Length: 69
Image (cartoon, rainbow, N blue to C red; front, top):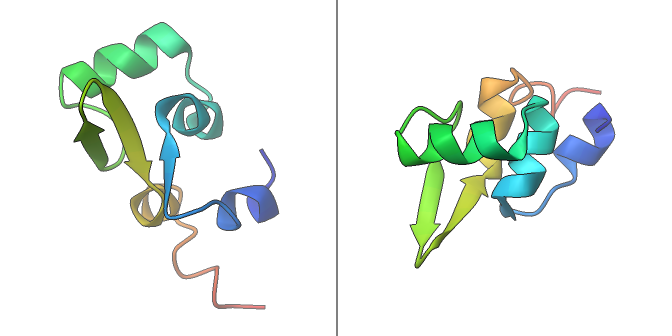
């Protein structure tokens, strides 16, 4: 995904989108999530995971870049 696409994501995204942003596969992403080792904050909703986009931005060091231009 491009930087602009990542910065325009909604407040939370599904785990598949988070995996795509980090460049990790489905199995690895779910394993990391289940073990509590995912590279950013997750919210568990029932049996699904939601990736917190603001934390994803921080993990990629895009948090400060969003306001700059």
